[in-house]
Structures are given as structure tokens and as C-alpha cells.
Amino acid sequence: MATRCRAFALVIGIVIPVCLSLTPGFVSSGSVSLDPGIGKVPQGTQSDQVYSDSFAANGVTNVVVTSQQVSCYRPEVPLSANNGPNDGYTGERSCPGATTGENSGGTAPYPTQVGSQPPYPAGESKLVTDHSESDIRVDPLNPNHLIGSTKWFASPEGYNHLLGFYESFDGGKTWPTMGHVPGYEGFTDNTDPVGAFDAFGNYYQALLPYQFFYDSTGHKKYEVGNEPNRTIPNEAVAVAVRPRGASGPNDWITSHNGHPDYVFTTNAGLGQEPDKEWIAIDRNPLRPDGSPNPNYNRIYMMYVNFNGNGSKPYVQTAIAFRDGTHSDWTPAVELPRQNSTDNNTYLLPHIDPAGVVYTSVINYTSGQGGCCVDVLMDYSTDGGLSWIGPSVAASNIHVPPLTGAGYANTTFEDGIEETFAVGNHPASTGHYPIYVAYESKSTGFGNILLTASYDQGRSWTTPIQVNDNIVSTVDEFQPNLAVAPNGTVSVNFYDRRLACPAAGTADATAAGLQLDQRNPNYTGALPPYGASDYCINSSIQFYTPVLKPIAHNIRLTAHNWDPQLNSPDRRCPCDPTDTFIGDYFGNDFAGTIDYSTFVSTYDDGGNRQHYQQQVVATVSPPKR
Image (tube, rainbow, N blue to C red; front, side):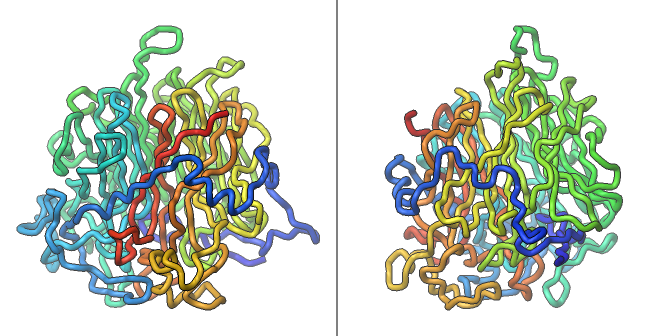
């Protein structure tokens, strides 16, 4: 058996090795042991050609959002590394003049950078080049108002980024407002984009800012007492609020009680590592029986803390006010776990119309032989004061890779195993449906599985396979669930069933394949013209509330794209074997319109450097 070390806290780049033993091919006693649900595709498979044509057949729209304006900010810690011209890398670039109207830091450091130790911060503002990992939310008071958020990179070679946002007021047709989320520029990085609207139309951006610096080789250094900026915490879980009616890129509330809006802070360094924060807000004024909801506008901020004895899940709450401010954050409450020394992560809170807050939890055991993880579920009926659980939604799932080389042919890593959502119409049990989708690699390739519970997690339906590709030797990964107001369920995911464009085609040139000249994980000829299980699309599958499929998978991307181009290097610029396209991407509904936001490096005419850009796709479920 081969041993692979899973690197947690993944996104923030602080590597905590947790070893899981993986059996190549997952062969047991001479036969392949498949996770339940693999091969159970209720809608049947479809050919690659029919799938390719489904983009036009279903009226899918694409808008490449983040290439439309020039954004710049002054990094706390600059990096001069440049891995180009291979894969389109350019290194950090001086700001050519921002067009967003944001405070780019071009004339002076930001207020949170005043206490930085020389030689920090950077001496000038830098161009935002790449945008990976994303979230999108629809305003409950105005379905035409959407806010997306994503990592906002100044240096993909150094994995150096803040969080940025992009905003539409016309249902996603145009995105006039965008820029980095202000208030936390004194940290080196700011990560894990996810947001939520309260019932008043204020938008809460969850943040995970942290500090590091680079050594002479470009490796990240996390040294307590030697941070670039010792006047702010080493790491934090925090919030920025965009109040209803805001229109400019700098219109954010970033403080609470006279200091940055911190939920949790630590200066302990390794041994106290908050990660994977997620946010949800209870927007239900009444319970289904007509009684007042005592947790109306309660904000739930969840995160995990890697503290040397397993990673522990926590929740803190506050009450949102009409003016965009909120009450103080409550003390942290630890969520139920299977075992006190197991690792628990990937909390994804959602709230049903009865005010019950649920979250999925991934549980895995470190330091022991085992291929697999469990998907657990906790819930609270009293506003997060006490919790019930965990119940097991799925067990012994063959995990996707968490470091480079886990997926064939390419170098990007994958992180979050599961996605979670709740329904909004009661089932025959009287409870609201809860849904879990997750990736299984029990075949050696990624497949997306889906299950539901209609009795608050006491029992779960037999998993079904979401992806309907006819060829099984390709990867489908990073599912994200959403539920429409009418109860329709959608699962979107990244999809590698279509081969890269062929040599000599305009599509291959626009995909930038000619730049892909060095790939340590690919044994075929480069550039990867016509390569299979290499380039990426995004897909979506719709279901009824009882998980009856509505037609087949639909292609969300107009063009295949190459994940090797400008892919951020998680470890250091000197190591091209562990790159990044994000651990998840956004999915939400406005009425019956599904909105997804995801990465593409394709040049549609505005992305000549093939940077990672965010595309917003819209599609409605096919008629039944």
C-alpha cells in the first residue's frame, strides 16, 4: 500500500501532514471495491457529442467576468518569482492603472499595513492576474442582484492573494462593480471565499486572513513573532459586510467595536490553525407553524481548528441588524464528533425553513492505514447553543487527492470532498430534505455521488451517480449543491470527459495549449493537443426534490480550458507538482435560473495571457 500525506490546512498553505494509506486502484482481494452508488446513473449515460451539444441545446449563457476590469492592490508581502513563459506565467506585475475604482494602495499603504515591519508592505500596487475558487450568492430581496467572490491573485507563483468580489445588478448580464474586499490588506493572504445575504439585503463576506513571508527560495515561512505585521493577529476568522444599497467597490463595513470584524483570532501559529470557515444566515422570520422565529437573522460562522489533537469543528453566532452591523459574536461552541482525536473539517452550514441549522462534516483518522473518510451531519434546533449528532450520511468513501499527481495527467490538487444543502418544502415525514453530494475515487477516477435524508439524518437514500459520461476513465470532481425556491436540486461539478482541442484548431489556440510545454505529471506529447482526461469543463445535473433526474448532465462551459495555465503553486515557485484551481466553485438559484461561477483560462478575446478568470454561467432546468 502506498502512503500519501494529506496536507491540511490546505487553502491557507500551512502544511500539516496527515497520512492516509491509499491502495493503488483500490484493489482488494483481486477485485475492485467500489463505493455504493458507482454506476447507478438513473438518467442513463450520454455520448460525449450529445453532452458537448447540450450547452447550446439548453440555452446556457457564459459571461467572463473578472477579465472585464483592471484590479490592483498593494500586497503585504511581494514576490519576484516568475515561472513564465511556460503556462503563461508572468510573475507579479506593476499596476497598469486600475479601472475598478477600488483603493489600489497606489499612493500609500492601507491602514492595516501601518504597523508592518520593513521591508513590508510592497512598495507599489500590483496587478491582479488570476482568480481561482469561488462562490456566488443571490440577494433574497432582488433576484437581479448577485455577488460573486473569489481568490484575487497578485502572484500565482507564490500563492499570494486576497479575496475579491464582483457584483451584478441586472441578473448577471453585466458586472460593473468589482475589486478586492478591503479592510484586511495587512495580512499576507486572505482566503476561502464564501458569502451570505441577511434578510435585509446586506451581504456578509466570510474571510480567513493569515500571515507568512517567503524565504530566499520562495518557500512560505510561518514564524510566530516574526510575522510581517506584528500589530495584527497571526491568523483570523473574520467578516466584511457590504450593506444594502452599496454601489462602489470600497463600500464595505469592515470593523466591529472599533477593530476589524474578527470572529476568532490566534497568535499561536502551528498548533492553533483555523481553517475552512463557512457562513450561513437564517432569513426565516416565521416558523412553518406561523410562530416567530427566535433566530431570525442569526449569522452562523463555522470553522475548524487544527490544534495538534485532531481538527475540531466550531460555530460562533451573531444577530444581523438592518444597517449592516451585527451583535457581538458569541463564544465558540464545539460541534459533536465521532472521536476526540479524529480530524473533522469541511463544515457547510445550511438552514431549513423551520430554523434548524445543519452542517455536514468530513471525518478522517490520521496516522492510520485507511483509504477513506466518513461524511457526518450535525444539526441544532436552538440557534447553535446545542447540537445533535453526528449521524453518518456516507461512510468509507475513497477520497480524492489532496496533493498534486492525484488526478491523472495534471498537477492541480483537490480539497473539499463533499457539498451539502437543505430543501425548502417538507417531505412526507414532515421534515425538510437534506442533500449530500461527494466525490468518490474508488474506481481510480473521480465520480460524483448524491444521497438525501428526509428524516433529519436518521436514514439516507441509496447513493446515485450524478455524472453520466459514457467513458468511465475520466475525472469528475468538486460538486456543489443548490436548491431552488421550488425545491429543484442542482449539482454542478468540474468535468474532464471531453478531450482537449486538436492541434491546428482555433479552439486549441484560444485555449492556450501552445503555452503548456512542461508538465511533470503527463507522459504524453506536449502541448496536450487532443489529450483525454486533461482539459476541463463545468457541468450541472438537475433533480426533483426526491432526486429524480431531470434530463441529463448539461455542459456549462462554452469552451474547454487547460488547468495547467497560470495555476497557482501551493508550495513554492520552485515546485510545479502541486498547483491549484480551487477547492470548490459557486452555485445558487434566482427563481428557476441557476447561476454558477467557475474558473477558465480560455481566451475569449479578453484573456490573452490565459490567466485564471471567473466565468458566470446561467441555465434553467429542462422542461420535464
